[in-house]
Image (tube, rainbow, N blue to C red):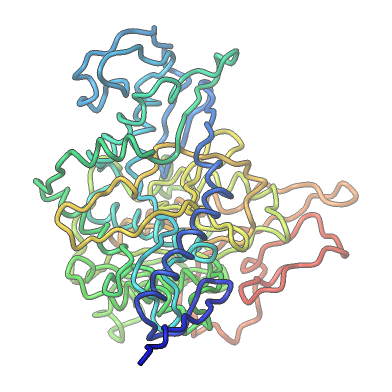
Length: 529
């Protein structure tokens, strides 16, 4: 009796098939996933393969750190000894060769800092996302990945401190610099330095695979634990599976594009639901209507004080928007010294991540807010900015001159199994910073900040208000035009002021106003004056 061959149902254009199919169908899905990833990398791969130029005459800012390359003396090309790459302060390289000219210690320090940031990208071949059939987030998960990067940076800051750098990531940087031309002065452009590749090619990956990384210190173990929280497994607290699940309450599902405001609320839910012991002293506050209510912050960070007395809220600030006052903290970024971590949060006050969804213009970023964004990126409290347009989210972490520095999540890589001992970490780090003009930023974004203690929050509040309001411009008829802050602070709780009239400080004025300009239709659009 002849046995009928199994009928393989056709998958849709997304590469999805019904649940419960046989192994042959699974192989078809995997093949389609790989093809989607390959096409995506053809489309976006050139971005991470090209070089980026940095001026030798302007400082670079990266999440509150300033790297003043302009004060450095240009190096004379010299031979590199074989063992120099093991020294964090050495010119990247190894095995002999000539060091690239003009790379002073400040620029090398910037590269080590950048490569230590956690890079989240599209992944493929991870366990199926519930009943959706998706085994990759290629093409739709970029904002979720940007949100992961922002939260990962916050957790690095919280658990390891802002100054911590990954030895494994720095080793990748040294390996990346071995090939000629990876880091050099641009021909005919002595005022600029060119930074090469943005991801690892097969040759470097193979060399690193032969190196046995061991979590020999508590810090390295913590770093790897943080990475494990973001891997794409159903039980990872911040993996794509959990984030998609939390997004359902906002009407989102796998395959949809997520906006920056919705991702902020998803991250808040993810922290609330996390059961890991190291995360029990952390909370996320998402600002409403571009307003941070200090009473809500007090209630969130100090739950034992709820109901005791409203007098405790008065210590967090006066009634009304906070203005800059004489004698308040000034200078530098927020959040205290970057060299010394603040005291561990006590049971009376939890470490705080402040997420502020904003919209800084209509279809494009209003140029008057560029100085504000720069000021935010200069603050020690800043853990980055997530934003972008549909299917092209980016994670902004610094700037030089009129260009913002970012990490791009659009390159697709194979999912990593964090359950394996000493799992590879090279795909979580990017060797090449990317830049784009501030004016190309999408106006819809979420600002991220970290405050370890109550005093950190108070200092952050006093400092950030100084950079939130742009300089007053000139409107029609040559008359001065009033400027509005990106966001503001109010004492009290949001529920106590729900019935009040909307305040101008809650909204962002568009300039110039064009009657024919149509705003994007989105559930996350903000009220615009």
